[in-house]
Length: 411
Image (cartoon, rainbow, N blue to C red; front, top):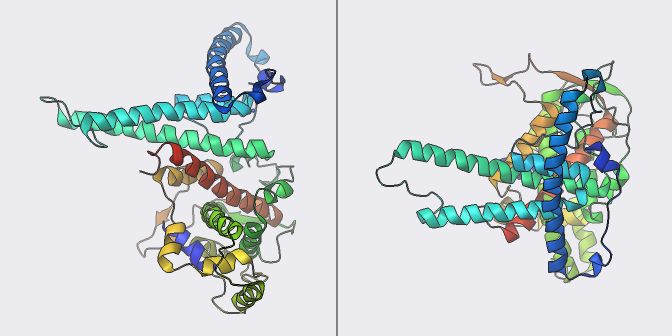
């Protein structure tokens, strides 16, 4: 059933401030929610002024110092670098005061909501009407540029919230692969074992599905330290597909956990559930089909063998639950809801792997002659895929929360 689900999914740290301990106001936790929120927002506003003053001072220091006395550089907290002023502001908060990020993001989202509402009232819809006697083409072009800027800002706010969830969990995102290549050309020198932390971020039922997803892609070589040269394009395809799989998985797992708590699952008894799980686990040529990009990425690659793919796929409750969906419900749950979320997936993947040069031959096939290869171990691939699934899960959480308060995200 993961096959149908995954196939449908395709459709669709300033260093000085970071080292300083954060100050807490006595009794802040005992304040009512609205007063705590006002305190946090006030802290964010004060932080903005503090950072502006700090930037001015640091620019004076750099101007009066020699190049050899430059400040130590800190590695990016995420592969995607923010471009908008709001995104850069949130990125700085992520490094210096990550606990203030949610309040800062909420403040920016409220401002975007105000702009969106004003634009709707002005034109009686999503697109404001041009002023009488004005240049219609120029006016529409200005409106398009403003809308593009608003969407980019929204994407970066949501992206910052996703990254903050990783920071909160104590997990560092894999940096851009171009920044992690060692002298041998190997890219997975991250020096951090976070699989245990990532596992605890998912429910038991969801992690069973994730293990099946890993077994599908890597077979029995998940803990293999063997280093292989693998197409960067294909690894990027698998990463993006795994993000979408995690997005879908979190969506159905939320519904599953709700119905389980209400004792409203489609199985009448434990015996009936065991029977369904046994039926679902029977061997079949079509038992577990991968996402089309995943399947093509690995089975057509010389570095990896398709032997063992589809094996060791274990029956699990969530899989049986998904199989009870009708086709329309499954398609709904497997669809990325907003262009903002889709843009985040695309830009994050490109920042991590680089923008690929895809050339289509006259025969309609992809010319892979210019495709780069990276040296990575199979255990490193497992780390990448597990991060991707978790990223998709966090993206669903963030998108759902923001859309429940500010309804311009999925519209």
